Length: 534
Image (tube, rainbow, N blue to C red):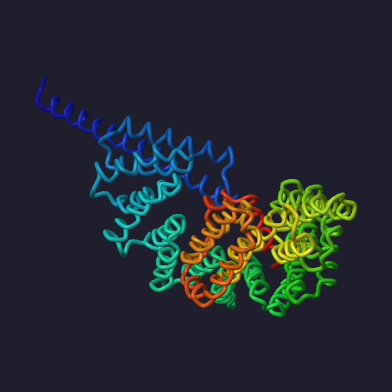
């Protein structure tokens, strides 16, 4: 072969290699481009819908498949870290957190100089957060902020750090993260998001004044209607809970005048009714709840309206029958309502209470009548969480039937309410002491001794223990012993008060389990009740 011919052949071969390499490079980039496009489409649809759909999941699946093929076919490509990172994000969107985590770790390990390292740290934190592995998530957040404090993702990382702290119940830490965002950000939308997260945290912690102050800062000029509407609903609730009734009414009335979408009206009407309850304008509140029931039947709104109507009749108007009727209708309006279960429990409890009240007059013996009165009081306390009415019922039962077999139970319940529900420790000590002096041989006397020990009045408990032991050992000398110990006990009022004032009060489940009957069960309706009262 001539030299010129060989040279030409070599040029053709080199050109073919270049063209082939260029073609492969183009094919790789085009596939990567299409994968990115699919991911963006799925993310945009996900953000718009607020959730995942089958179509979105399919797109994320295709992204993973394309990236996997690229990584396998072109492991030495200069864009391989792009494919690995994109694949990790798509896996996380599919809730394949462990697989996504492995891809982000691969970026950190095999491509430490890649521009994707900061993003990989953020996504590692997010992935662990989604897995509820909060401590591990926090470690990646802290690493990011330490190594890339000026990176464009820092605000997202700070927000995520606050959310992680919140899940760890480190609320001060969460507020610190959100506060750092508000302090260093320059864009109003970022500052507003930080303020909103702080306000929502205060709201969740029931710090209504602080939450209201945060919400108020967000309601300046230029705020979009959707955001104004959502923030105002929460702010109005804060106002009613803190007694700013008129402010709440004006806020809700103003929103009602501007609202145009049908679905925006019912929550505002419920808010207006709550402001009337706050002002003790119960007739106006009930009229608004009736309006919600009439205009939006068989909805979550009508269910809530019936629930709150029941609360008014029970807690404000002392009309047990009307309250029972209202609570009984909640489930029929909307079975999935958050108020349905608690309303059914309240309705059943009230129905039983009404039956007890109707049969009380026909009870045969004093012991039977006392037992019925005791059961009614316990329903008020443990099932309806009406502490004032329960306390009054226990007191009435004890006054009417002081010698009944159930009397020590009522005496114990009265002391327990003062201790745990009203946080009146001095009164609790006095009532426990009275129970022991009056009913030293009852099981409740031993329970009262335990609670006195818990309250820190050891000397008093010791003397009363001796009194109980003596009463149990020699019933014939009970009257004489009561006189001796009663005089000694009554001389210690000041010492008891000083000892009790330093003792924190919190229920002791082990101690309560020893008492018969503990009309003291964990509150399952507190949140809903307070919502109703608000």
